[in-house]
Length: 258
Ligand SMILES: [Zn+2]
Ligand SMILES: [Zn+2]
Image 1 (cartoon, protein in one colour):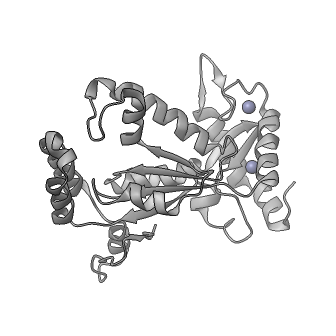
Image 2 (tube, rainbow, N blue to C red):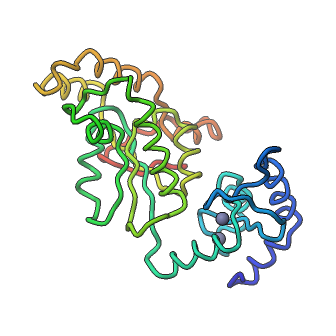
């Protein structure tokens, strides 16, 4: 039951009722029907299905359709799973998810190391490679990509539904594509942090580190490709108002505007 009148009204609005119906259709498959996005078991009856907002609805954001009516912010779940989810929120502090992005060798992992708590969950592809190969850092055989990616997706799922007793979760990655990282942020109910470094700084770090010597060519390519693809988040502001120039960040890690 919604705490605030304005929220109860939202749940009765035709916009919400229609969106929920539409999502139930879109997310159903002919073979398995509609699956709960928490336990992955079928939701058999319409009445069992709850549309849960990942970024919690509040009287302040309920009129922001990017939150309240954004399909990426909505999970279709069983009543019982929904209750369990909210019980977890009630028992513990709200679990936050952060996406830390930036070019290779910009210092993302160090940033997380300096900011994380002991009970935080960290998802870092490079570290996952090491964990399952015992190879030196930076050596990432493409043959193992699929296995690493499956573990990543499993962890992303756990973070998305706030499964487990962790405090906060950190997702470390390049995420040079603006749309990709913004979609991920919405899907995860996460905040974005940008760890900034110039291409020259990244290349200097690459050439100075002897451990990276055998992988220099590969990492040189990663750096190059990242800067080719990267568009800062301020571009979306520019598109709305072409008087604004690109923003130059000065801090090591800053929260981009969404
Ligand atoms: Zn369920
Ligand atoms: Zn909910």
